[in-house]
Image (tube, rainbow, N blue to C red):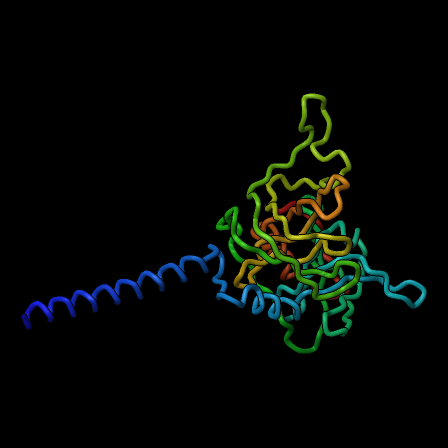
Length: 266
């Protein structure tokens, strides 16, 4: 009788252990997004808090007023800022407005229009908060993402969604009739493999970082296609590996006042 009781107790203990292990496994498996871990009930809080200090609104001064142009983000602690080239349109000097309201003068270091990436430099006088790049080759459809920027001039704004496609091919012409795939010209750039997401990209948000759950940059917001349907649309981001290659090429360029030449990305 005692042996039977011991066996039943052992079986019950083993069953309890297995149940606990299953619960832990399911909770961990549901949190993994392939590019950073999201804790239950936390979501993108830590990623957004980290990115807000490094995301800027780019603007120019006109008649004493700031005219918003788009978004950008800091990629080195000594003040390199990256944005989409079409946001600044070759402007040699812009203002970088941070989420806390501080403003820094930023001068063009280099621009690569072939991939729609521009690099600016500020002289902050102290180390800045900077975002790091993740390997965009590891991005997978379905993983959660957050898009940071300054839509409508509201610096530090975050929107979220998922990666809805990777290596989205954009080409011209894209139909037997020779028409552009996006007839309204939303995608004019030469990048042929975008990261596609449903995270909202609105006016002024282009140039902002697309982040994984760990707060690392996986793309640079380039354009949006909505076909005029309110509240709907897709956003397209230049892969981080492309952006990083441009940044690395211009990183050794002179500081403000010494613009680098524009060359195609390797």
